[in-house]
Structures are given as C-alpha cells and as structure tokens.
Length: 132
Image 1 (tube, rainbow, N blue to C red):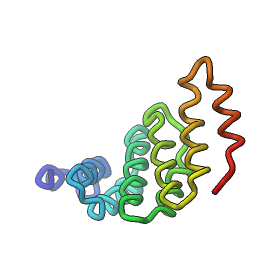
Image 2 (image 1 turned 180 degrees about the vertical axis):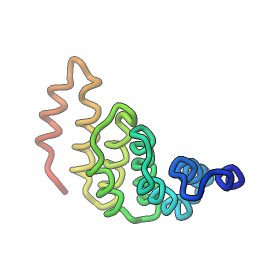
Image 3 (image 1 turned 120 degrees about the horizontal axis):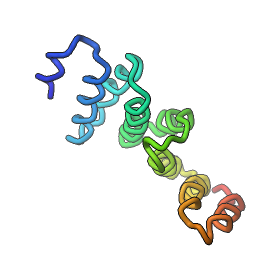
C-alpha cells in the first residue's frame, strides 16, 4: 500500500485515508491516527470523511485517548454512510471513560429505531437512565 501511496501526489487525502485504514487493519493505530488527521485536513469527499472520522475515533480510543475520541464522534453528524457506527464507537469510548449510563443511553437511542414495536419505550427508558 505504501508503494501505491507513493505513486499519488504528495498529501493526496484519499491515499492517506487508505493507508491509514491499512494500518488500522494491521492493528497499528498509532501509525493510523496521523494519517487520518492528514487525510481529513486535506479534504475528503463526504463519505470518506465520515468513515475516516469514525475510524480515527476508534483508533484514538484503542490508544486510550478517549477524550479525543469522544470529541471527534460528538462533532460528527449522524449519517447513513456510517449508520450506527458513530454511536457504537461513542458508546464504547464513553464506557471506557467510566460513563456507563451515558454509554448505554447512546447505544439504546441508536438501537431504538430498529425496534418498531418497542422503540418508543426504549427511548423513554434510555432517557430515564441515571449517569454513573
């Protein structure tokens, strides 16, 4: 992948995003994070921007940088491109911060729309959860 990236113009955001994704796949999040940041700064199309943001946040979380991960995810608007991934990774990062009630609330709100008969009840129960 590095050879392919080297063929692209320097700083090509798509190439940087793809290389970051490979580093993530190889369980090298510390190598992926700066590449995701460069790709996002360089300007990606909307779909790749959404994916890169979720993947960046996931890598940050794995590295124990949960404050940064939560920040990335809370700034990211919900999108059909990444579906519930935004909220799933947000719930994981909140849990890692010891914010279990908030994590469960985020996860349940993300799940509720998929429960036609019970979604409204799950929304109400989620809203009633007490923070840790």
